[in-house]
Image 1: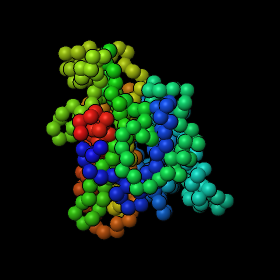
Image 2: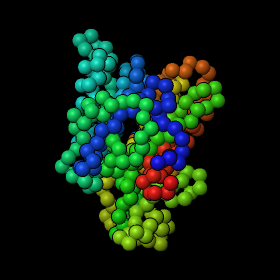
Image 3: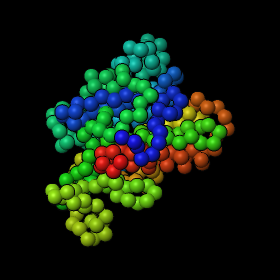
Length: 317
């Protein structure tokens, strides 16, 4: 189906995406690969229930500047194993930081909780991670794929059935040619909204199919789920640009990416979500940079990608 908003993170020079999933078990992996010498990386974790790997090295002032791939995975903390498979695959290809005796692929990762969606005993592992990285290309596929295979949204209202979440992407080309794009895996406690109109795109439903947006709960007209669904959530994203940025700027890009979360997910960054945003600069464009403009575009494409993640799933198209 046609996406609500145009573009893909793979419109950014040097960025490719690969997915692998177990459709029966409702879990999967998405890999954002940075070709060539990799990309300058950054991260910002806002949710209070994160599951991450290799995020400290992305902080400004730490030794490693560039990353080779970012892994987004289902399976909760078990899914971090998928990054091991990506590392092994890239090492076999001679890709990674040269440490003399070998090359060490730099592969940060984050996970979302999808263990209740299908067979919770099946989680993304090293083999699935290797399969995902082996499939990287200029994909525009969205929806129930990769890390979004078992994702759900709208899990606050008691008695409501969650709606399907998924993977979404979007991109923008700025004046002068710089591209900014995003990929998200949306598994939010909250509901999904159109970033411009405020229309509810996806939320929980009662057994008879009636939509029950969480805003009724937030403002006192509906009961709160008690206790909240611990560990059942987390939205992950990677925002990328081909502009030439330093590590501090890329970390700032990850920070403002969360503004896109806030425009399209309500409520967001709850204590039940592990919301994490990665940022990448492939540095393929060496021209003058308007960093304020790039940051604004980052928030924009994240919001659009979140809307795209549920657009076709809800049958709106």
